[in-house]
Image (spheres, rainbow, N blue to C red):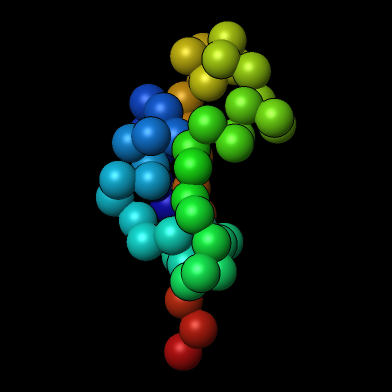
Length: 54
């Protein structure tokens, strides 16, 4: 589990495939503002859970 201050920070530390994008898609952290307000992000931060297929 990872915790970041913003989606920009999360996107810098993980590959786009590992956060749910396809290889041919453009990963844009600003897209997350459709789901989370800036106020929520500032208050709670961003949490990511990494799951690996064995």
